[in-house]
Length: 309
Image (cartoon, rainbow, N blue to C red; front, side, top):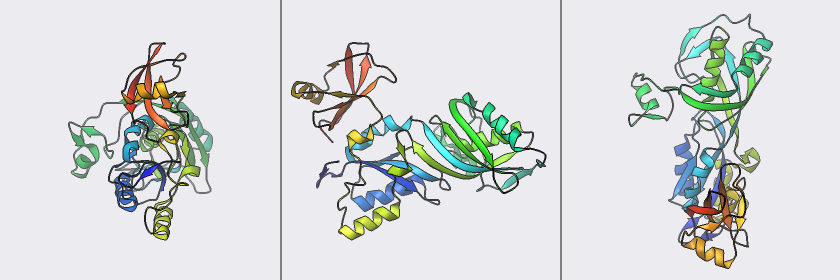
């Protein structure tokens, strides 16, 4: 359970099931007021029209969000063949129509499979990416298009299935952080000799967190209203240790705790494996810090929470 201090406000992670029409910033602002915690941030932006999993950190736990940003993302949605739009999704104006009635489900599946693995992807103009200090979507609203360098992304799975509607396909995508699903759909349409745009998008997972962990803003508002304040968030708020539940752990005793509090190196118990990061916890399981392997024998501090948890 995440500890809460009256002075500091709630600490930990809230997994939100974002509704359509809300920006990620809107969600953060709403929670800031709802839970009385000024220090609030999110990991992994969702477009206003997209729904699903959004990770929001509270208090000192915002310092841990960077360890969640680069995790694998899972999406479900629908795409439509036969037209492209200014935004690569259903929110934009139609740019061009294509006759794609001859394209069958097997063709779509085969092309989607070819768009997996390590890819180079050009970010869309309607994105939050900054170029020369300006966000692309801000430039796009001014009718300005700038050159964007391709970025390395990874698509582990791009599965498609026909629906009852002609030229409409459902899909599931598992991909690296930084992958633009709308661009993936656009690439699919072009590879089929025509065009396509994203119709519906829902993020179902971010790293170790899924919809089963998530709560809508309406649910949280009702809970706070019923309790007359931030109330008991035990079933909603994940502790700092739970935020990093997908990360290997190192348990330290009282002597190790003293070293962690000063950010001193620790002796590694074994090889790093994977990304080389470890969550350092005390004997009660509360998160103390995140350390990184330096060689095979030493751990060095990345973030020290000094016993938050």
